[in-house]
Picture 1 (cartoon, rainbow, N blue to C red):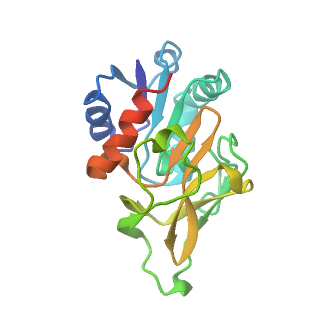
Picture 2: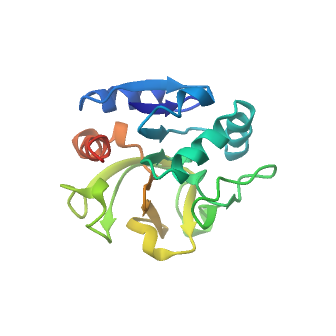
Picture 3: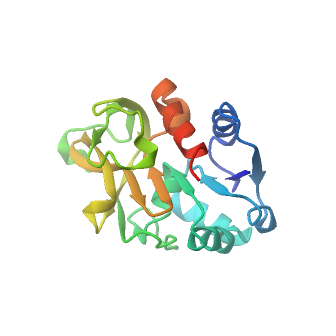
Length: 203
């Protein structure tokens, strides 16, 4: 069973449909007790860092998610759901992140002559082909982005794919049982669905 965390934002139904395509049984979880029996978690996200963290805390979901990760069960964060894994965000004034990954989340600088948010298709530069999420995914593949902030890990080794938009930023991170993607695999057509399939098949 895969828990899709519902904290009032995110593409819940699109993510659920993508997972179910590959035979996954899913539950939309908005209570801590729904998470513990699940084998995997997906944390989607659209919205603001502060609002998301405050809602997760209010619903008692933060502690349940941290327990799941510490128990070495697979976790996938999508877009904001990935950013919440880090310690801090320049977007946030009231909250800290889960701090399961060392580093921060920063805003794109418009001084780089780019439009913010970064919206549309862009390429993946694969840096670690051993990441299970990337099985069958070719270097240079295109995925769909929609974000104004990007992760900046302290350990460059967890960045298994990068993307260039004004700067080169981490678009996929992987540390043990933790996977994070800055793009939206559920909107990235066949290539994104391949990554969803890879996550479903994780042991």
